[in-house]
Image 1 (spheres, rainbow, N blue to C red):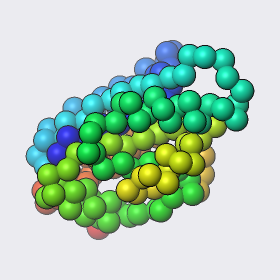
Image 2 (image 1 turned 135 degrees about the vertical axis):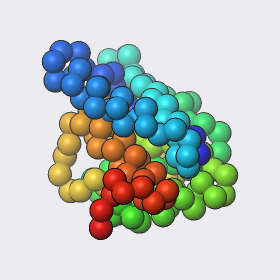
Image 3 (image 1 turned 60 degrees about the vertical axis):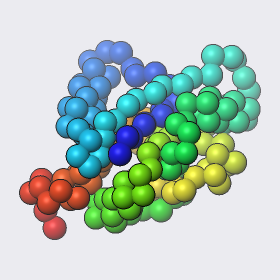
Image 4 (image 1 turned 90 degrees about the vertical axis):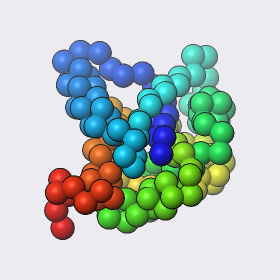
Length: 159
């Protein structure tokens, strides 16, 4: 199952940004295609200076252009559904068995465009708190790695 992570914004430079990028890379490298992976990161960014209220729609156009055709759309949003790791793995496993790709989307600072969120097959929350986008990338990559471990019976995940 091919996985695409579409993130609004570019990775931060500096010590903390490099540390988070390294953590993300560690988890992403371990997604080997058995049954999940590879994980491809696509960063999109609106370059025009727009009013804040116009940014989500402009970013949604960039996100849609980056989506793989026919992919399951998983939108990250704090108002979404909080799944435990086993349920998340089960969903990914079902889509894998259907021969689907999955695209996970992290919106910009103004959040996801409501129309894009409504198009999602799953709106997923990593909890009700707001997280820095760079950290969300790491947390999501870890949960994908954990889902792979659950689906293959690897002991990384413990009940």
